[in-house]
Each structure stands twice: as C-alpha cells, then as structure tokens.
Image 1: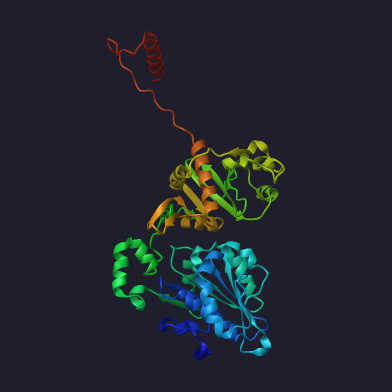
Image 2: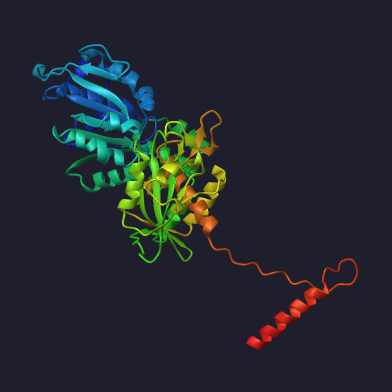
Length: 453
C-alpha cells in the first residue's frame, strides 16, 4: 500500500477497512463519516495492487447522476498521482497505473444502479455499492455479482440503514459469517467523527426515527416518509407475509403498472372472502407487450380479470395507433382486460393502505415487490426541510403504482352490503312524507315476516 504517495490520509476509523483481507465487506456508516471518500480510495488501492491483466473496478450508486455528484470529483482528486492518462468525463472513468507494470493500466468507472444494463457483460476485480439500501434488489444478483466470478473480484456493500430491507439482510449475513465477511459499523455517538454539539442540534431538529436511522444506524427505525411502512410492519407482525398457496378454485387476477421507459410491474392475486392473497409478482424493463402477455399465459393460473391503468387506453404512434389494451388483446382475451377506475394518486394510496390491512403476501415470490412497498416514500424538499405530498420517483414507483391499481380494483369489485332503509314514521302536517302506499307495503312486509316465523 503506497500510503506515502497518497493525497488521501485515512481516518483511523477506516484503516482496518482498507487493510482487510476478506473478499466481502459491509459498511454501515452514519452520515458525514467519510464513507464515500474511503470507498473511492479503496478502489484506487485495489487498482494499484491488482496483479491481473487490464483490471477494472467500479463505484455504483443508486443513480448515475448521484455517482457523478458525490464521487466523481473525489475520484479525480485522489487518483491524480497515479493516473495513466486523462480522466474520461463522458464515461466517468479514470485510468490508473498499476504497480505491476505487466498488468497494464487499470480503470475505475462510476455507474448508476438505475441503468444496471451498462454494467452487464463486463468483468470487475472490485466494486463498491454505495447506498445499497436504495438499490433495486435484483441489481446485485442479476447484474453485479456475475461480473466478479471469473476474476473472483471483491465487493463492498455500503450505506446508512433504511429499514429492514436488502441492506439489512446483507449486514445480517456479514454479522453472522465473520469468517467470510468484514463488517464495519460506525454510530455517531461512538465514532467521534462529529462534534457532540452538532449531534445535539441534529437530535433536536430531527424526529427520533430520523436521528436513529441517519446517525445511530438503527435498522429498526421507521423509514421517514414511507407510505406503507406501518401497514407492512403490522402485516409482518400478524404473520401475513408468509407462504401463500394459490387456491385453484378461485380465479387469479392481475394488477399492472406499465412503464414506457422503465419497469412494468405486475401483481398476481386472489380475493378469498374478505382477504386479498397476493401470490406472485414480476417487474422488468425494456420488454414488449407480447413478452408480458406470454408471461401471463405461461403461468398455470385460472385467470379472472387483468386490471390495467387508465392510460392503457391511450393510442400511440409508436404502436401503429394501437393502445396497450388493444395490443394485449392480441395475446389475451379482450373480455378479461379491464381499466382501473381513475383516482388521484393520494386517493389510490389511501385505498392501498386499506387493502394492506386485509392482504397476505407470498414472501418468496413477492420479495422484490414487498421491498418496493416498504421503501415507497414521499419526495423530500431539501429547501423546506419537509416531505412533499407527491411520491418520490425511483425504482419503487411502478411496483407501488401497480399495487394501487390492485387496491382500487379490489375496492371497486368488493361486494357492498345492502343498506337498510331507515324507518319512516307517520306525522301530521307538512312534515308528513308517509303515504297510503307506504302503509300497504309495510303491512305486506309484516304479514310475510309473521308467516316465516
């Protein structure tokens, strides 16, 4: 490790992290502790020391713009003494001269998990996944992990807690497998990296959950601004997130949200008495309408109604003037396709909250969709220091919107109990609304009731 030539001077709290020998690492770090600076320099160290030809390393943030904003200047600054060429501003990559001259220059690149396909197909000798709790859960398994296999690259999962999501699962794996994992947890009350007076000010200005999550790395704190956090905690406590088998005697319905540039999400569910049984989930992007109709038919379910969002009626030029519902009708029965009643987003969220009180989820098949519902949040206004009314648009949006479609459809189809007509009394004067016909009708009802008794 060429510490003398580094512009970077590691904080004492991160020295053990840089000197680790384990392939897998997890960093649970409080805000403003220097996690991004440590991560960028760990990639530089890895690039300098790699013995394999043409090494490649990556820093991945939830969004590419976020990676550029928080890490690009740090990477250029700290890599300056070791550059083997000019940084590539368009590709967000820097060439590094390896200590082993036969390896050739290494390359460190920045990526966003929102466009994970840009990572697909390359090899990596090391990768940092920063703010991993904000990643779509499938990104690591489907895209990033395969890039490490042929060169047995190392990986770092970093972030601040956001409830018991995928990052919490990684942290638990690291905690329970110390022989394979390096785990670093830094809480602001213990790290000594933030002035105690500043921490006290933060404690006064934030809610207890916000402070516990952002500064004390508490995975049990409620996710600020989460729409469905309380409902899903109750569902988990009541055992409604479990194994849910499909009942072959009951039709299976689907609820959709269709993404034109990003994910299309689908929930499969059954309504049994007054319960909603969610038995399956799917989300993918860049697929054709035929792909989704084939996916529906490939599952051996007896279908009821396929509920589509209201904009599925819109005709587009790209589809030769056909709407989504017309395109789906080419592969699915038109009679099974229906449009969800058009409600505002806020009304739909309220309907979803009510539906969640009666919903059972298959934990395994709906895992990614459940993670999306847990993390679906209101957008935060940095200037006003308050949550806006509208939801934040990220990878959780389409799964949550599809569940809104489910909830609104269920509410529209839910059997309504007939309301009993309020009895009317005979009155004298203008207030009288009781007529002779009403008297004969009530008399007949009385006769029939006595006869049944």
